[in-house]
Image 1 (tube, rainbow, N blue to C red):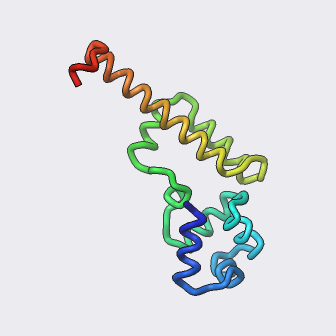
Image 2 (cartoon, rainbow, N blue to C red; image 1 turned 60 degrees about the vertical axis):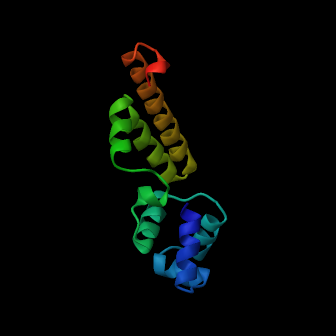
Length: 129
């Protein structure tokens, strides 16, 4: 998602990669790496977010709001896991996609729990739905 947003904004403003990177406040090599699908640190995400006027979570394709509250409250230790992962992304130890993987798995588990609860509430009988 971040790549397409960047490409659209660069095209809209009719900027070169160097000019866009200068406006964002990052090196043109960093912008090239991101556009090629490479690693990105949190500081750069915030700079790009400011430049395009989109929240960092939306820029990365995360659905915010109730989903996030539900995920955090439903999975013990998720806040600590995400904080640790964010620190490792920022230090370059892991790729930003690790946060997306963690979030996707958490969302899957929340949905599975919801389905299990709904089925238990209906006595496990799918015919009642």
